[in-house]
Figure 1 (cartoon, helix red, strand yellow):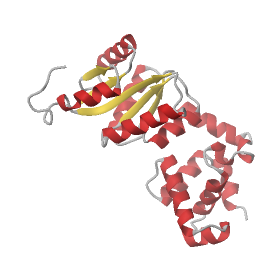
Figure 2: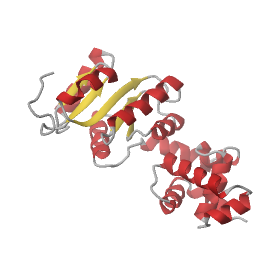
Figure 3: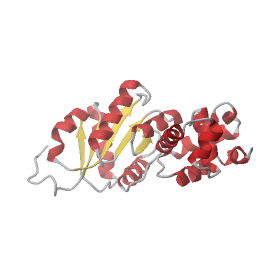
Figure 4: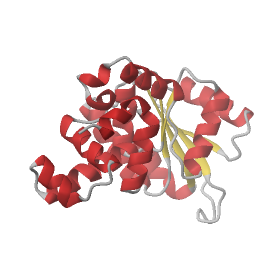
Length: 232
């Protein structure tokens, strides 16, 4: 890779990280041919990117994890490190697996997008652009599948489609009613500090910025559980 005279003023590039040479080159060429709108640079590993990142300013990082599970401890730790090292640079992963548990785990790690390999290149391009604009991309098919599972009654044994623990679901129920932390703590027999920890974890899972946003997002994801929020 050529060293620029001033990396800070160079055009930001999309880095495609994949240990498989052919795969990363094919992905990069597809992104270029579909007008991603920035230079696309291929890298064999994240460590290689760390060693070379001063040479080219990063606009986004796309990591292809293939068939690996985000929930595997090594991958979880790796993604958390990637997100930490990238700072404000959006991190998007490309993965073969499309189940919601893996997507949620990826969001917990702080990634800005989860692109399944079942989608077309046009969707991939738009997902990367969304991440660079400050949004978060998840496949609609997985969200709909989770909603259908909830509507089929799965939420009776796994609160809110399994997205939250039982205690977190109880806190969400109270948040949807607009209850203050002190009231939630009293009703659930918890310390107020514990309630705050639950709320932070709930917001992190949903990528929400405040309590009101949590309520709106839960209502959108689980409209069939409106009775759960209103029942005494």
